[in-house]
Amino acid sequence: MTDRTEIARRWTAMWNLELPAAEIVRADARIRFGRLPVVPRDEPLIGPAGLQAVVDATAARLDGPVFGIHQVVPGEDAELMTVLWYVEAAALDRRSGLDLLRVADGLVAEAWSITGDLPLD
Image (cartoon, rainbow, N blue to C red; front, top):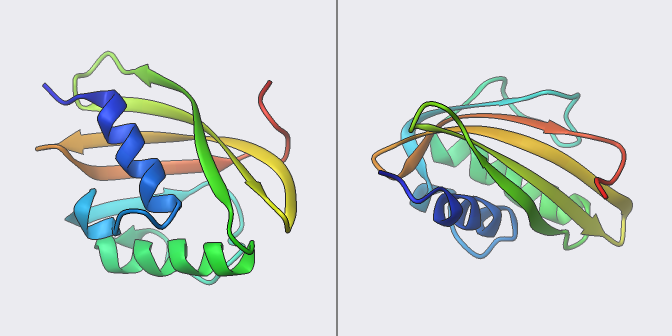
């Protein structure tokens, strides 16, 4: 069984540039985003290299964003989980979002990421 809290912590650490995507995302992972991109990207992204490029470009564009976790919600399926998250940065108001993650063998195999324009309180 996958420790969902640890997966969420590692996923968030990736967005904070503390962990490379290759250490949390499978080589064949598919990542989809639910809004227009703030940085150029393929849709869907396949594998850690494309995701790392988006993470790096997002960090540069937002001038050092800090991502955090509101809550981790387990799915009914042992492979699924939802991470309710927030981001703060000098270049934007606090935002929140959710990432639905499918995990296989301790790594993210699929992700659907949706960023909202308002903070979750």
